[in-house]
Length: 249
Image 1: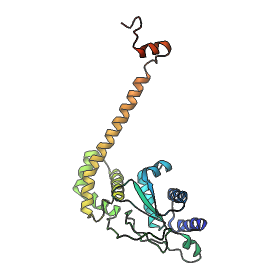
Image 2: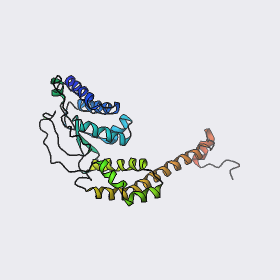
Image 3: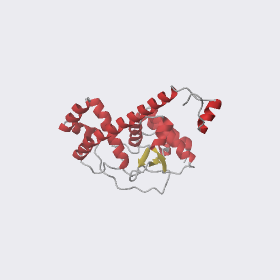
Image 4: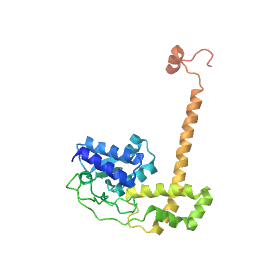
């Protein structure tokens, strides 16, 4: 693979798809990971590692990754919920070589499923041994949320947690993207997805509240400990050895 041609091909697709600075950062991060493995492609990368390295919110990462996939720049798949996701960088050299012709995305279907299809598209890939796998049907996130908004369950959750549609959409997208990574939405109906979200949200909010309470408890414990005067020198040594000092009795 021609490294320079790969980068120039990416910038041509950037013009076509109006990629954001976040999309660009994510692509070049994955490109460098592939480069560091001596161009082993596909390669694995832990999502938590990517989020930490790029300091990127989880929902933003999912949206950006799906956008790069729609543009025909990369593919990704996760098997049985394993933390390491397999990424495949699409060979963009032909895009650059044919730059004077009409630029057509390798995998531009016009839909954003964000799904793990397990299927590598395009005329070439960096690894000739990759084999296509059967595509799984997944309902679009936008369609699933639009359906959920019109249900009684949506109104019940909004009243229970005092949420508006924007807040509900944020949690729905978080739910959708996390389930996509695990392959849990493959062949699920739109009713199934809406029902699963209804049961998922209370558990998610309860877990978040527990983490918040733990964090507050740790801060309070640290604050209480910091208010105690430190024991130093001979007094500290005697206290450690269990020697009672005059006045302690």
